[in-house]
Image (cartoon, rainbow, N blue to C red; front, side):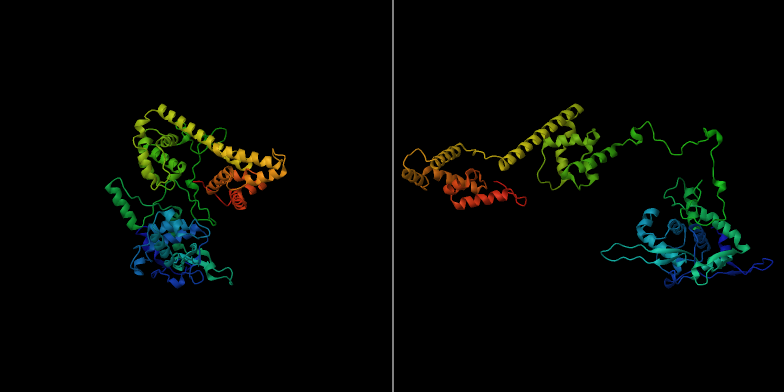
Length: 499
């Protein structure tokens, strides 16, 4: 509001007479104590919509009746454009339940500044608590819910008459029923201000004159309107005294074809692939760094700007993430990585000079993929061999000496089971007893080989016999240990590693 309109806004028109003669009285200072900043204790009335509330906000900003430094020694010095910008965001909300983080994101102010301006709006009687937010340690912070209020000083200054339509309803629900003639001109000016949008002041100006002008407008509390912008509030309910028909522009008939206007949606540029802007040098570095942190496990969690700086040379040479992975395969990767960015810097040293052509990089990728395929086939063979070992038929030991001993023992056991080569049964019994004697060289070798396998967690030699024969040759203790190893090997809760 201009300096000329400010004194007029601070005047109170008296009760309207038949001749509409007006007597003026100066308003007192505007301040609402903390105990009266609740909806139940407020003396104002609830604003019918955000547009009417913004009229009251601009009136408080231009009247000078509320000065923050009268009541506190810190914070903003005046109710100015920044406070109006915060109120402008609150006017769009329904219900008015803004979080401090939301207002920080929308206005670009600091958290402390947002809290200051919310307190100023409450002290000026423009906001009242419905529910006060909570900040409990260990729990999610709850935002406060406000009611947008119109101070009673505003109604008094403009000669607005209000009425309580329901006598049993609270006084803050009273509605506007009329306005004095002396206040109509000021209400029209406030309507124009409420229809505008306050913008964030520019930090840099093109000339000294514009800098001085911007500073002068800030000191005077002048609000800058956005050109060619029509007020469109999502929560608009009531009607305003300002017509917006004059700001609506229709396309001329020469721009129409078959009664249909062209789409206002801007078309994507056909000169760029996919309508996207082409990345510059820094953009390519960051793109490669982001892909590397996603593709390589030992780079997970690393800072993308740091990785972009480390990989700047290969990124500038046109390398892709596949080229980098192929190069790292030939350089070798460490099993334990303490600092991923440092290891990457060592591995990528002079890489752009070694693979300096696209053909060399293509050959490296082919060799890397061939090595990956060979490793995949090797893993398949290992899994297949392990499956056949545990689920298929028994396989002979790898050692040739052990194989000969096993074959001799199996042949001897079979001879004993089928009567052997001897006619005399007693002689057969004596031969069997002699064969099972611990002093026999073959049985001793089998037992020694079985003990070595049990120490390594292997049970191939013992489980190769049927239970009765194994019990006769190796004894109950070794057979029991072999059964334990077999059960553990097939359990999903146990992993046996061989050394």
